[in-house]
Image (cartoon, rainbow, N blue to C red; front, side, top):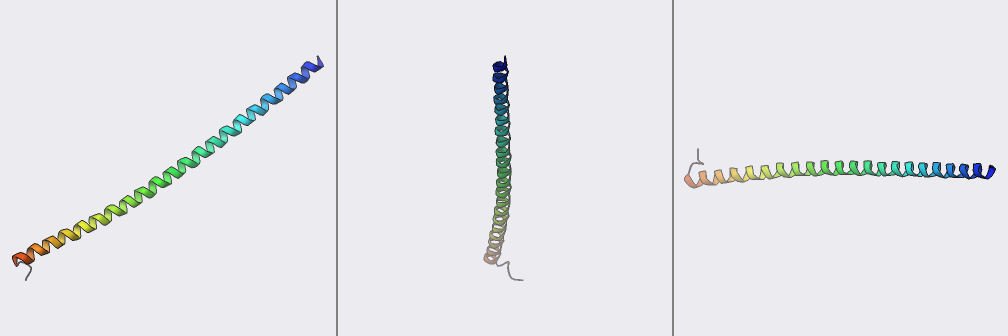
Length: 82
């Protein structure tokens, strides 16, 4: 009977070790997933900011080109003189 209790105790200890190992693995996976999500969010925000800057710069260029075209037409028609 003593040997059976000893074997049962060892089995219990192995089961607890396995359970703790599984918990540790799950926590590590959760930490990695959280870190990956944060990195993805940061990258998306950076890309959004860069796109906004590009669109603003492009808008300014189009505005300048349009103004240049208007000035050229006025000059051609002699309307630029006051």
